[in-house]
Image (cartoon, rainbow, N blue to C red; front, side, top):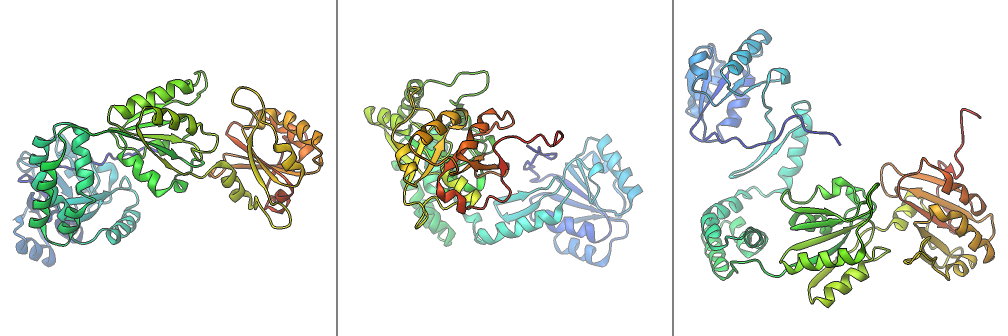
Length: 471
């Protein structure tokens, strides 16, 4: 996963001396940005262009008709260099760094200690978009999208929060209770009033809600959430919202890190799936853990690959919550069979071809193999087989014994629904070769039946690996 070169922070400039060095348009751009802050701005411009000087006078920016020197840097909190001259930029950057003053040089990342992001200004709320200083036009495009999403007076919510912050901290000492109050406040009636410009009315309503709030956190809740096949853009909006508000994330090993990373930074993350070199946690232990976490007042997201209600043992976890009389909610996800069907343009049910769909696994819950689905497959239905790659030979033997034609089309999709998916296709009698491919390491879903022949398999690989060098 790529890493940030520049770490985004908010620098407190209130009452501090911020220096801008430059005579022209670039210096003017920096001033236009800085006058929205509470900084004490000083412009060092030996020969300022008329527009720059007029702007400085209009906004009360202190003007010094000379280049900044050591005495200037001794009192400065930040320096913005916008002279446009490479030699002068280099000199001023070196002088500032020697004086330990953070410096930004326009269009010269190598000379800069920090970059200036594109900013969505909804004071006191601000949103910074950074591209590590290398793609400012891209940052501006992202800013335009966010600007369109947020109403012009969105900052009134920040004013409402500022008016209540001290009272909320005093009334609700527990972090969980405090966070839940803020979540309810900022999505409720008081927030609507604040956005409408009725800040006094909003503050009064919020204080009434605060007086009625419980100082300790209330009962917890479990959310069984489907993570889908792993692609972030296939995660539901509800699942994304719950990830951002959960106290604890209990996730399977198949859930990608980038989905878990959507959670709040302070949320606890617990992996309970099977990993290489480590045994999976027993289902009984997972059930006990979920009950304990929810009973302690946490909002727990149980994040499962695919859909939680399809081969995800959600029923056992729900039963444990019910037995403990604890609250839960289920959030659907995209299961692997549907993701694979989308990847291959296979209609799992197709008029005149396949009227039935069965989802099964290659492995039963207790090591046995599920029974009964062979007859549906033999009758022309579509079979979506989960966790069947390693037992493909036994699956084929059972289907052939049930009367299925060995020429029945079959497709297997590794990492269905993701950018790194691979599609393999062939016939039923060729399927056992899939079990011997060591290059397939991701989860595989297998689709079997006449409907498979109507999909888009032009770029599919064969089940047996072809040694192109030998060929």
